Length: 381
Image 1 (cartoon, rainbow, N blue to C red):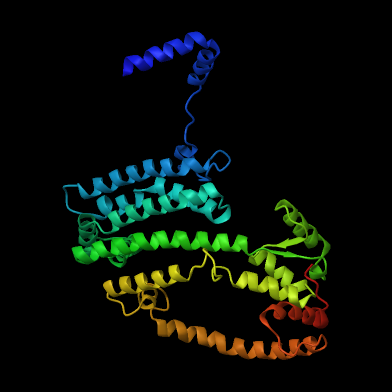
Image 2: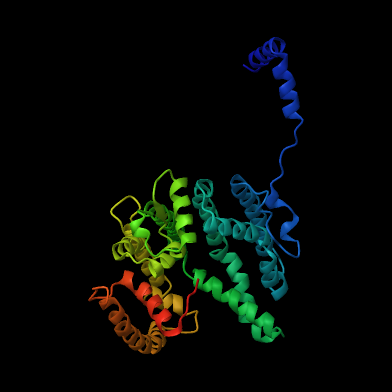
């Protein structure tokens, strides 16, 4: 078979010399280096080379960096000498720096510029990172070394900073499930993997519904909107091949609109488009994902010995318990609610002049702005 392919290639080269020349030229072009694997990670500034990174660079770069991290972690568990702060805790701190930097660079882009290519890479990259995290944090041999150092911490003569690092490292492993039995660890790993997929799906559905919920308004519906904002909305509509004014279902677009639009029906339309993201009767509805995430969080909390997911999460926080967190919230909520009722009474007086008897969510920002102007002559523009 190989000699037939070579013969065909030779015949084609004789018949088409220009193609041979082109192939030679192409072959001389050096293979492009992945910019994510450069020395920017060790640079004092540590700024990713976003100008040269392509979406297709992230996954292979992370694959290589994670392989490197696995080698670093394996080296810690293979140490024959007894676990020490230096050969275990410090070594863990130094391990995986490359993959962490690359992952941070990717998720910065995914959160700010979620193009189709970036979205396509998000699920496999999240799965890779979750698999690595499960393998490391649920590794019995690695945890045994961390635990051994932790148990003798009082006699190690550590500095306060070293003690804090040791305690936090041990706590992270325990809260990840490292101290559980084999079957429980395996189930935690499965839950983490499913939650990772659900998290990506939730974010992408929400973003898709946000884009689909953009509102096209008429000239009359844009009454009260500043000229600069109107111009931007008109250009946004034109960019999508539509006439009129486009208001995207994002907080940065919706809040200014609700603050200045005099057309109440338009305010309601824009507010509901924003408020209903992910809850519409379409393929982007996130209700099933949320329900499943709650089920998995409840199950994982139970495996960790916590009464609820809230108990598990808050255990490692300042509040410590859901009751303490709720008490703090109520200390803020009650006086804030009373103040909001006072503000509502003032806003209702302004709204009454427009024939509105009940202030709705889409009215609040508009009349609050009117009240600020009335009281303080304040124009944020």
